[in-house]
Image 1 (cartoon, protein in one colour):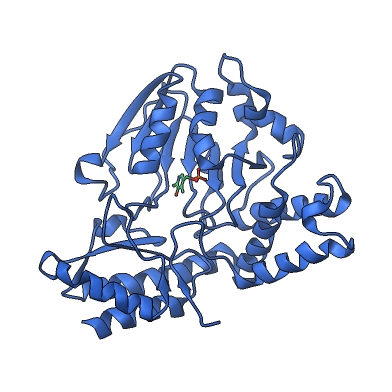
Image 2 (cartoon, rainbow, N blue to C red):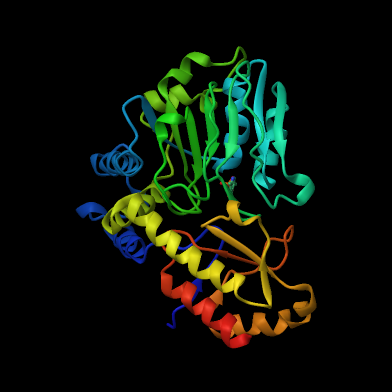
Length: 354
Ligand SMILES: *Cc1c(COP(=O)(O)O)cnc(C)c1O
């Protein structure tokens, strides 16, 4: 098979070693003679997988014992309502920085007063607003670290005296973060952690005391999942297993500091090519550029060349570059497992095409 360069925005590229090890476990899991897909999640072999995956999350991100690490289902989209369901008593503050942030706001509005502190919607989300202050009388403040569709990323998190909650679906494990600043971090796995089907939630234990005064269904109660080691019900065993192997690879590379260096080199390589090309331009403000999702379009006068460029990309086995319909053009997602060679291949195609 020839090498396909996978720039998919999600589900996305994972480490090859994660696939190889997972295939092995589908055939014979941990020496049980059974497939991972047919054994009890309460057996000691899978309990070990859970413990190791949690251990990797804690080690890589530096998560202290003040936090629980949960593996839930329903995707980041379920967190959009699970968070306000649990913690929105009166009002919450949000920033509106893209499609996903906007969806989180819409869900929260069903539970209380939502104070949208800042929005870049009027400019089609080309930048991250910074001139706002988080009020100290709201239940929490919610932000989105990386705007997957528009290609912007928070470089410096705002100060917050209220619980800081962040959707890190598309840049978790791509760079070190100071977890101690956050009360809750969540991420659908399928961008940078593992395959679709598991949602990572890192929650500070003091949040359990801030529960909203309403009925919370058992499956929506973070504390229930924490008390049961994410096994209140059957967890998504296979996505957790693949995530474990993918995170093992992140650790082998040297952890998040090394990963950030790799990701910066990849992003710089591509942004330099865009900035130095008369044919293309980036779609976002330079200071807010995402290292995970690089969005770019043809300059107006060259738009008629798009079909030819698309054919050249296809020929070079570059996959998943089509921009989201709300931005158009191209989006190259440079998640952890994408090698620098794939970016270089894209840059070569851009140069040859020019
Ligand atoms: C993809 C994405 C989501 C939606 O995730 P699901 O797991 O599909 O619900 C939410 N937020 C961000 C930032 C995303 O990139």
